[in-house]
Image (cartoon, rainbow, N blue to C red; front, side):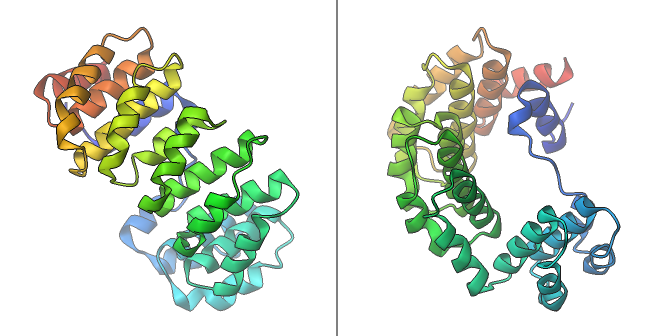
Length: 268
C-alpha cells in the first residue's frame, strides 16, 4: 500500500475529527485551477456552495472575480459574506484585511476569533504582530484561533509565542500543530518535550509537527536522534492517535521502521 496523502488524511479524520476541517466543495477544481467552473457557482442557491466558490477563487488569486466578490459582501447569508471577505483579503484587498485586523481588539471573543481565522485563511502576513498581541488567556476559543492562524501564516516570529501557548496556554494542541507549519528548527526541542505530556492529543500533535519539520528538513540536527528515539517509544503508546502520528512522523524522518508501521496502521 502506498503512503498517499488522502489515506493519511482519512485516517487522521477518523482518529480525531477536530483535525480534519471540511474540505472545500471545489477542491478538484482548485487543483485543476478551473476558475471558470468555480465562478459559475457564485450564484448557486445553496449558501455553502456560494461561500466555497468565493473562497476557492480567493485561493486561486482570480482578480477577475473582485467585482462579484464585492457584491457578495451584501449576501443575506453570513457564511457567504464571510467567505467573500476572506477571498477579497486573499486577493490583496487592504481595506478588508485591515478591517479584520481592527476586529482583533474587539470586546467580543467571538469576533476576535473570527477575525483571526479569516486572517489566517486569507494569508495576510502583515497581521502576525497584531495576532501576537491579541491573545487572551481567558478565552480558549481566541487562543486556538490565533494559534491556528499563526501556523497558516508561517512566520517564524510566532515561534516563541506558540511555544509558550503550547506549554502554558489554553490552546496547547493547536499551538503544537501550528509549530509544525513554521519550518523553524527552534521548535524541535519544545515539541520533543511535548511528546511526554499527559494529554494524548498534545502528544499526537507534537509528533505530527516533528514529522512536518523533518519532511521540510527543519529539525534541529543536534536533537534529531533524541526526536527519533522518543517517536519510536510513542509507537507503543496507549492512545491510537498517538501511535499513528508517531509512525507518520517517523515516516517523515525517512525512518524505514516508521514507514512500515504507517503502512500497517493504514491497512488496518
